[in-house]
Image 1 (cartoon, rainbow over the protein chains, first blue to last red):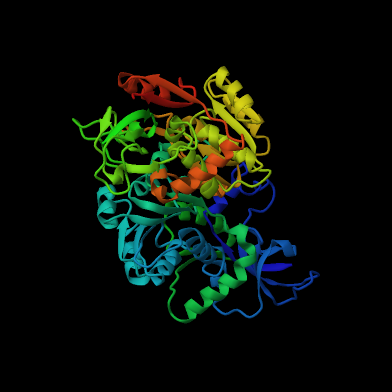
Image 2: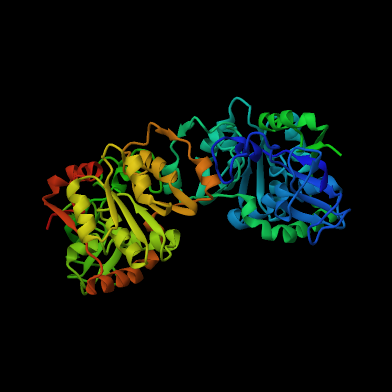
Length: 297
Length: 297
């Protein structure tokens, strides 16, 4: 039995709640909304877990969760960072940023990377990791405040507000030669723009499709296969839950970068479980500032 | 100076002739149409080439070509197969099939591969190489005659005429569990169908986009990034001219498979340079039967 403390709000939840399966089964009506959370073990009959342990896993939108060990992604015996970090930068968001960038992006010194949702829970980490890897980093975000945060806090070289009138021209100018890596959390029209700025042999990491909240109506867009062909792109999908075995190792890497002052992260915490549904909507509208969490305990 | 013998007709020529650059500069008005060809050296001032050599390279739609060594892809001193084969199965078509399948498709025994243009100059080789690699092979082609040829000549396990009324259902049935590799020469609506039948971690090789002859109007289609994400696909573009250094080595592999009776190939030869423009149109309409060549010498 776990007392939930922080509920994690993630764009992926929109997909989990859809009534068609994608990479995971749909949440059943009448059951708690699926959600990651950080909580504390109150009592345990499960081997390897004792009362007092902090855990990160699928505990759902509820105050207390009866969890099986298979629902737990990591056990946090001695927190090396504030607990909330385990639901964000040390949870699926930072781990996604690390693994997707390193394994699919393969950033090389001097390359240019474009990051959508540049100030977001995943994007902000991608931008900083790419910068550490020696890339020129371009970010897209949704407000002037976030543009400023990306430049000052996350070290992007260029940041654009994607709502600006001449995004196409501004992005082409920012991309200069071309984009070697596009780390895409949004899909949609921005993907259509970005793909047409890719360098030969560029990599697109499809990590999210947050610009489109409903895929049931089969949205239309520009055909992109000709760009993939003529630019010899590699477009790959990434789902972090395929890599649970690597979570502990990547967490350690992230902790040491945080400790060295090389990784900044923002959190946007609301209070009370009744704020959870709206919190997901906020994330889709881009109104959150940093990793969205709901504190419940 | 080369006397052209076989002009090679390739879907890629449609892109070369467009007035927007893609992976190569547009053909300039007033110059011969860009084309691969097999011909015989009449006279040479170039080191490494002597009169009597057969060559395969960019000789254009003309009877005689003044070629620089950089235009030549391979020199054929002692033909190991009929000359026409050097413009097809031993030219870019067979080499594309080999390299794109092995390096991007990475077929494993027991996997299922779907090949569009299954009877075509590239597709027919892909299907046979995948079968040799132990895959279950599904082909798409454009006529009942070609369905028969694919089954009897190229060893496909299942072949569908993509013009049939219920292609979606027929393809889903043929795919059974799912498609591990989609070798795509056509793009468009068939790609949209196929991507929704892909297995987790499936590979799509974008080798051509022959279902759409004009990309200047930015065609629309289903958005596919959600499929790439949730199925964790890897979609890669392939252009054979990136791999010219491997041509000789792959040619040798293909020759030994032909010699062993393990690779069949079809040719569809028209006569006279005046048949060349229409030959390209035929290829786009799927009316050719096998590698389309124009014999001029």
